Image (tube, rainbow, N blue to C red; front, side, top):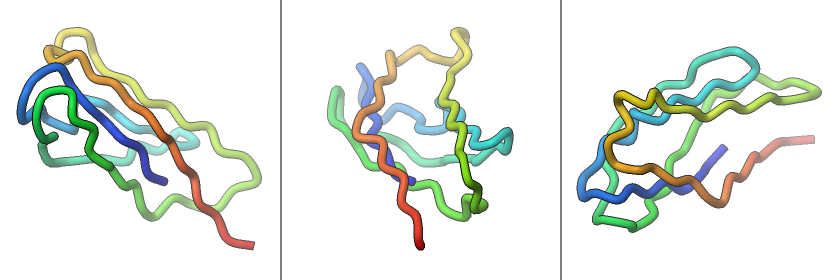
Length: 78
């Protein structure tokens, strides 16, 4: 799975947004680029399932940079 993430500030921490897929937390790390510039984030090792529930969230106290996500892509195999 990949998605693009941006923030209102420079060098914002990617890990403020928490990703959970089918109830399993998938940690992210790193920093975003410049202000309002989207950076691609990849989540690997997702367990196969007939259905996926994807949750992306942030705690209000940690979200100081106004995060946004776009272009969520989920890849599979047949």
